[in-house]
Length: 509
Image (cartoon, rainbow, N blue to C red; front, top):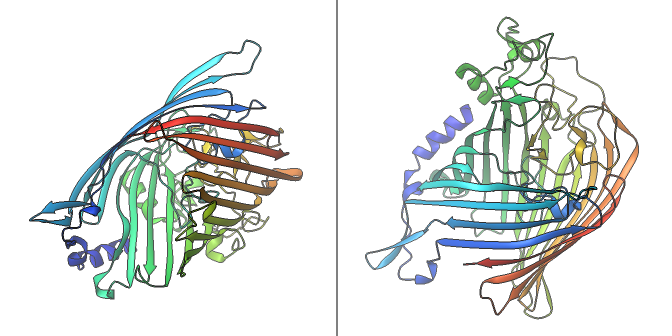
C-alpha cells in the first residue's frame, strides 16, 4: 500500500504528463466509429456429451461444458472518442465515457434418455466507464486479462485468463502505460485498484468479496528497440458467511469471516495476523495467517522491436501461501515467447503471430509443509481451506484453465478438493494468420502431463492433448458479416476423447 501512495505522489507531480493535450493538426484519419453492435447465431456439436477443451476454454464462461447446443449472442459497445475536433484541429480528449452490454442465450440439449433441453441467459459484459486524463473508472462486468502475457494467443494468464464469466466490480485504474515526466518518459506505469463481488450460488461461502490491485512498469520509450516490463498483481477473496458446518470454529467465528473496515485494511496490506495471534476476535485459521485467500503473480517481460517483427518474452511467477518469497516454488511459472509479424505477405497464407508457452505448476514449494508461521508453504494452487470452491467463479477456473476443477475430469479421482488437478506441466503453441488478406485462420495446441494435487495425487501421470483450428470467413453479400468455423479435438485420459466443432454467422454494425 505504501508503494501505491508513493505512486500517487509521483502522479500528482507529473500532471503535465497526465492531462496535457496532444495536438495532431487536421489529420481526420484519427477519428473512429464509437458505437458498435453485433449479433451472432451459432451451434456447438461434439462426438461426446462434453464440449472439447479449446472450444470452451478462455471464452469468458459463455460456452457450456455440455455440447449439442444453439447459441444466440448480441452486444452493443460505445467506445471512447479518443480525440475531438476543437478550433479546426483534433485534440486528445481529457474527459470521455463509454459503456458495453453483451447478452448470450444458450439452448442446450442434454443427451439423456428423455433428451431434455436447458435454456439459460448469460451477461458476460454490462459496464459503464468514465475516463479523465489517464485515469479510468468503471463499474460492472467487463472482459479482462490480468498479467504480462500475449493477450490474443496465450494458453491463459495464470491468475486471470478470461476462462470464467467476468466478476462484477468497481475499478479505478491507469489502463495504459503512463510516462513519468521526471524520467523523461523512460519509465512508465499502469495499474488498477478494484472491489468486486463473488456469486452466492457457490457451495462454500456467501456474501464475500474480491479485492484486486496491480502495478506494472515499463522501462523504455515506445519507439525504443528494447523495452523491459515488470510488475505484480494481487487478488484476495475475503469476508462472507460459511455455507458449510464449522463445529470446531477453526476457520470462522460463528460461521462468519472477517469483514470490518479494519479487516479490509489488513486485506489490502496483506498483513499477517500472526504478529498478534488474536484468537479472541479471529478464528485460529485467521489469527495465524493473512486474512482471506491471497493469490497472484509477479511478472517480467522483454519486448524487442525487430525490422519486420516484434518479439515479446515473458514469465509469470506464482504466489499464494508465500513460497515465492523464499524462492521455494521458483521453478513454477508461465513462460512465453510471442513473435508478431509487422508486414505479413499479401498472398497465400500470411503468418501474423506465433506464440510458444510452457506452464509448470508441479513444484508448489515442495511436498513438505512449513512449520514456520512466517514462511508460508507448501502451496496448493487455487484451493483454499475457507473458500473451499477455491479460485473459481460460477464453477469455472478464473485463472489458467490447466488447473482443472474436479467436475470437468473424465475419470473420478480421489479427494474432496474443488481443484483436483493443480500440478501440471504443459506445452503450448498458438498461431494466427490470413489467407489472401481475407480469411482469418488461427490455431491453439496444448500437451500436458498432469499429477493431481499433493494431498490427492493421481495414481499415475495423466497425459492430455487438445487442439483447435478456427477460421473467420467474410460473407461478401452481407456487409460486415463473417462465417466463423472451429474444429477441436481432445485425446488423452484427463478429458473424454472427443471431436467437436462450432459454426456460426456474425454480423457487426
